Image (cartoon, rainbow, N blue to C red; front, side):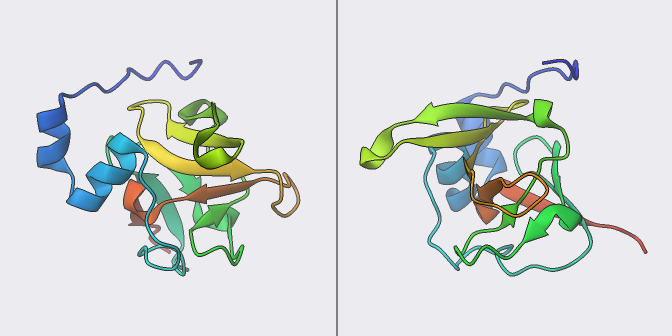
Length: 136
């Protein structure tokens, strides 16, 4: 990790105490919230989406787009060092899982079907995010 940010490590009990049940299941056990159910899938404020577990800034609102999939989607991460791509062969599919590189929280998956300029779609669970509005 070239950003030199220290890894955040907590016990299972500490994660359970910090997170809601859905946040815990998604971030610590790679669960997925139902499509169109998360608080950020249709969110349009200007600001920064951060990791719900460690407050690492992950995505800016100007990289968010409506992919129609029912989860918040972004075409780029704020810093590629903050997201780790892991091959995922679960559920009979081949995908790329995205986790926070600081605390190992499951965020979602990335697909090569997004808009320009990157053509990537970071499909992220709302439960893995918090939002900080930008003061305009």
